[in-house]
Each structure stands twice: as structure tokens, then as C-alpha cells.
Length: 310
Image (cartoon, rainbow, N blue to C red; front, top):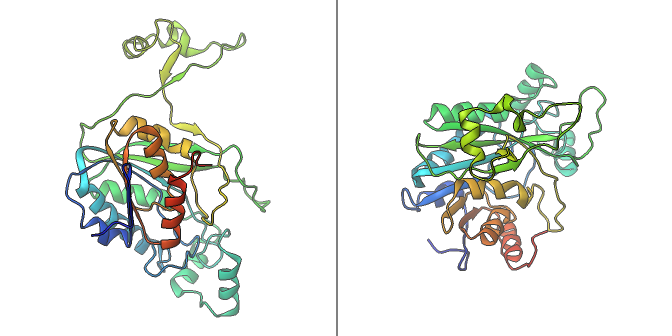
């Protein structure tokens, strides 16, 4: 299996991720960090791409088949982090943010609306399909251990042209492991600034539990730090290259630090524009990336050569 690109920090393969994963040795990966293509959101114009399955059940099944292979190549003490968003049933089973070109093709009949999508639209109306939860439940059914459901809060989210619901400003990050004991480095955050009108539980005897005392000893005896919480406020950032779904490097810095030792190997089976690879390079980890689109492989290689990602 010949890499598309390789340097001291990154090995990149251009191809179908499931087939490529089958060529990787078992228990060779310390950590997986990735964001798969969301169901019925966009057509990336690549044959065999994930996300265009006629039903969400097929999408979940295919996605979890891929993560079966991820589980095989992950070390026994490995961690797995997955960024994934939801989809609305409206629009013929396609998210309202899909490309105008594709929606036009559906409207004109050039791209026929799939009967299962019509059924989804009829049965579920304008409902969220609950893709992240279906995915997480199936992963647990297949033997993964779900340690955290993390909320990626996006303060600068894109406005939505709707007036009958709230604008969605978050996505999910699921933290999975394959065994009860795994490599993890605790991440701390500063306690909130004291407010005279509200007592901060983190710096008072209200939270002076044995666990708090032990953790406080890592940094200070004055409760200045606490265990990192599960709502992560990270702004989205524009990227000038032609890739739709770029998550910010700051989002995956924490999983990298928490879930992969220095010099460890990180796998991203849906590498996209290469954010994971660049974060690994900056933080002293090695990356194995798989990307089905040659165009995005070229973007990833270009980002690795930049002094600053974006």
C-alpha cells in the first residue's frame, strides 16, 4: 500500500478508508480523531463517498463498519474521538445546507428524489434525525465504551434563515475507548473568576471533596484549577481552500493532549483538509490520514507545509 504523501510527521493515503484500514496492522494506533462526512449533507463528487446512502440506517451501518476496523487497529489503551453533527429530515432527506447545484438537480428531476428519502420526509417532517445518537448507540452496541459526550459550542456559528426554531450553535464530540483502562492525561482549566454575588463552588469548601483535593494538588492548593468540563467553546475559522467542513485546530488540541502520548500515532480515516495532521505535527504526534478525494489530499499536503494552518 503506497502512501500518497509521507514525511516525518504524516503518512497520507488516498483511497477508500475501509479498504485502506484493512491494510493497517492491528493495535498499531494510539488515538483516532476524525469527523466523518455527515449524512445527506453534501455531495463531494467522489465515487464511493460516505454520506449519500439512501437511508440513515444504511449510513450508520456503513459508518460503524468503518469504526469496527478503527477498533481493530487501535491499541488496547487507545482512545477514539468523533466529531459529528445532525441532519434535518426536510428537503427530501437532505440537509438545508446542501449545495444549491444538487438541490436544483433534485427539484428538476435530474437527480431523482430517492423513495426512502421521500418516506423520511413524510414520516419525520421537519424533525432532526438524531444521527449522532444513532451512531453512538450503535457504536456501544458493537462494543465501544462511550466515556463522554462533549458539546462543541460555536459562538460564531452561521446564522440560519429560519423563524420557527432556534439556530443550532453546537456539534457533538464523542469520546470512545475499547477497554476500561486506557491512556489519558487529565486536562485542567482555570476556575471561574470570583463574583461577589455568587459563590464559586470550585474555590470554596462546598466542593472540597477528596477528589477535588487530590486534583488541586496537581497545580495549586487554592483550587485555582479544575478538571476540564464537557462544553468546549471554540470558534469556527474560515479556510480559503475548497473544503466545506473544516473543524478548527483548537477543537482537537485537547483530544490530542488528553488521548495520545507524545510521539504517539494518531489516525484520521476522514482526513479532509488535513487539520488533524497539522495538529499532530504542531504537538509532537505522528498522523496516519486517509482521504478518498485526491483534491483534499493535495489541500492537506499544502497545509502541512504552512507555518500557520489558518
